[in-house]
Length: 113
Image 1: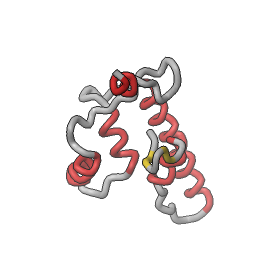
Image 2 (image 1 turned 90 degrees about the vertical axis):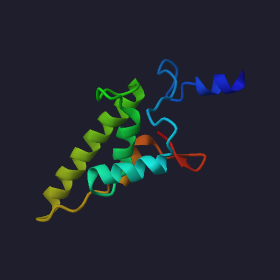
Image 3 (image 1 turned 135 degrees about the vertical axis):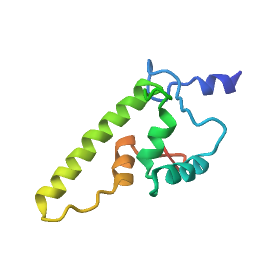
């Protein structure tokens, strides 16, 4: 019974619903490798997040996932505009660092999303 309760816990706060993803039985490492091949470039944390938290119709699995994505879009846009304002060359934005900041850090030595 406790396993079922834990799977149904609302990690995003009361009313957000249980934590969900669309990864199936594949590990995150397998998804990361496959996604890098599909994208023809190394995938970043945000790419993987979108892959594992979107349905086939491109909608997010829950409100929390959509909120994280929306925050990430705002933070990324701000980082790109500030780096282009400060210098002639646009520095490469560290998407993994931005994503880590948006989702709020680590939980049990794993990135919490």
